Image (tube, rainbow, N blue to C red; front, side, top):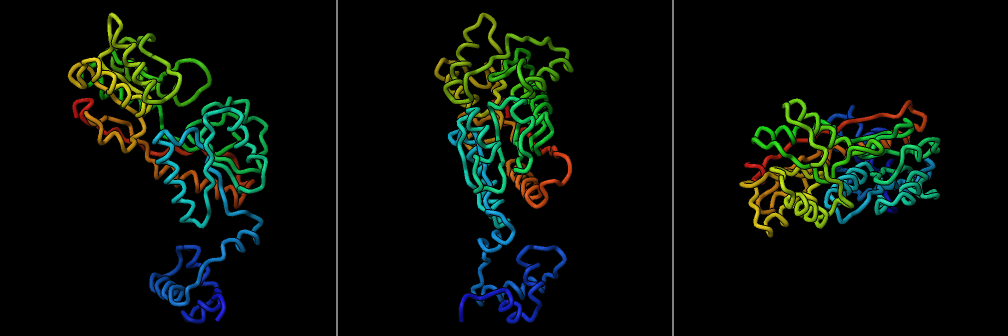
Length: 336
């Protein structure tokens, strides 16, 4: 017997080829008993889906690109793992591209890398300007993570960064902290994740009647451990140092905690530290790190679904904007 086909599975299971196809595509209107019978037939015959043939018939490659700034940053590595698992579950393959946060590489991603080897792109941009998306070729499905598209030409998935930062700041205020520095914050420039989180922080201060101090919003060159360490040292050498650090990613926060320890400061006795991203390392730092944890599996599911929907129907209505969940995980670095 040659390579088994759908009709062979159908004959073995005593069902129609259409029913086998429905099971393979995970259609919901199939009884569990029928699913079991078909899957047993698939296992018995050693049937394998011919993904290449399926994609060729549809005029597709079966591959999507995921472009992220830096795989050394744990958040992007963890998110990539979830995206790859989701695309594999749905019968596609993920091409992983590291942009380095460089505008030219992010522009190449928006253009589909000027090639025909992907059906669409999921992009987490850092350097793109809003004008870079205006007038793009909408025939290439594109989903943006984190940054929105003011031109309204691309689907978008993110957490509510304003609410997340507001919640983190409210937690610090409830702890009695009043001079809260925002490490990696930004108050000017294009609307981006840094600005949104800074805005949420400021909203919490205003709601609590605490003065907003612009000098406590400290930009950083990059979101790495060394940048967090340098920022923490600069802040604590001021005549009136902060009593808490809201760091806009966990790498900054972990770098800050290490620098504070080396310089003789105690976390959380002298000051609290809170991070963003909910990376695995935050569970094991000393002290363990309070962090805002985005729903990374949920972000991946939403992004892949939006992209594959757009692959199926490129003209399927206006760009969609979806919000994934988040939660504040309180740990030792802020009294947990």
